[in-house]
Amino acid sequence: MELLLSIGFILALNVVFAVTIVFFERRNPTATTAWLVVLFLLPPVGFALYLFFGQNYTRQRMFVVKEHEDRCFLQGVFERQHRALAGNHHRFATPAAEEFRDAIFLLLRNNRAYLTEGNRVDVYTRGEDKFDALFAAIRGARHSIHLEYFVINDDELGRAVVRALAEKAREGVEVRLLFDAMGSRAGGGSRKAFFELEDVGGKIGVFFPSVYRINYRNHRKIAVIDGTVGFIGGFNIGDDYLGKGPLGCWRDTAVRITGEAVRMLQLRFFLDWNYVTGEYPGIETCYFPQESTPGATPVQIVSGGPDTRWNPIKEGYLKLINSARESICIQTPYFIPDESVADALRLAALSGVDVRIMIPCKPDHPFVYWATLSFIGDLLDAGVRAYTYDGGFLHAKTIVVDGKAGSVGSANWDVRSFRLNFEANAFFYDAAVGADLVRAFEEDLAVCTEITPENYLARSLAVRVKESVSRLFSPLG
Image 1 (cartoon, rainbow, N blue to C red):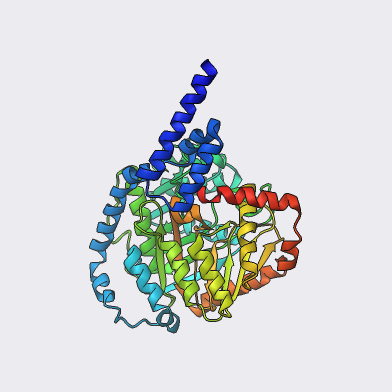
Image 2: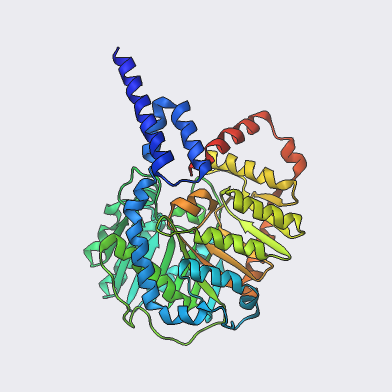
């Protein structure tokens, strides 16, 4: 009798959650269907999975105010530029920016992503190079250091970063460190790992301390030093990102930016810091110094997440794909596109654009890996060429279009990055930066295996089953 009551209670909960999904949450229809399948095919665990992974209605309560405040602030700070560019009559300084002006205006209007035209962009594909540059920037700091990372591990590299920050805090430099509660805990980090920094006056912010929720995580990777040097990309802080973890050699991409775009990274950090701590450092000159521009690369810093009305990074990707005339090179550890992205890539390939996608040869999340292979397989017949990177684990999140424009950042090509996590990418419009990224892609091809239509069709029954099951649950994020 008690067993029947328990089963009846669980089924009743599933019905309640099903009604919530259909009537109260404005979900993508594919995701809605997937959740209904989970709730009714797995009644003993469906409601638990929904509590852990679902509940998008909480997004409205948690982030709609943040979205409004962020938009109002950015509009107030940059209203003059917004008015100047709103009419689409502005002439850009570089040929690549002129060629991709529609993408620039899309991101401006969609995300208040203001274009900065005077930047120098240095590309890093090895963890050693990226962290050497980050440590050098930290050692040279004179006023402020602001770091925002999804994962800061309590390991050799993580402790070295904390020590470097504590040393600068002792010198009187303002240090603010923001990390995601789940990301850093999953990576072996916790609040106690930062006591050394807090003891000398450094400030710590923990994003979304509710670690039982896998959604709405701050997946951004941003560093800003003295308001003049910025970093953004795919590297978190931990030994794994130096190739010392279980996945072996780590292939990632990040950029170091000097110039006006650093101000946009600083603003992104301030908005997130204010959300977590209630402290807004202000727009004083010390945080936004006026310096001569060191380069000529146009850059937009684009943010996406549950606090954005649309999906700015995904829509930026789509605009770049639709603007391509010759080539598209994509690197991503997770490729679970929605129909709009998959259709755009298919149409580009059918139109004669050379579309190439590179994914890892090994999974860090098996379900995501098998779903990725499934979605890759759908595109092969259209002429998309796909490769598995065999030189280690590929974690880069990049796109380069026609060798002239593209993006580097934290956003993967999956529904989690497009809808559920907080992400930040740098979109660039410059042939020199594009050439650097295309060169890195082509060097990686030397250690890749191509996924041809023939060998994809020849995959085993076990692989087919794994793909089918993983794909069924992929809309859940």
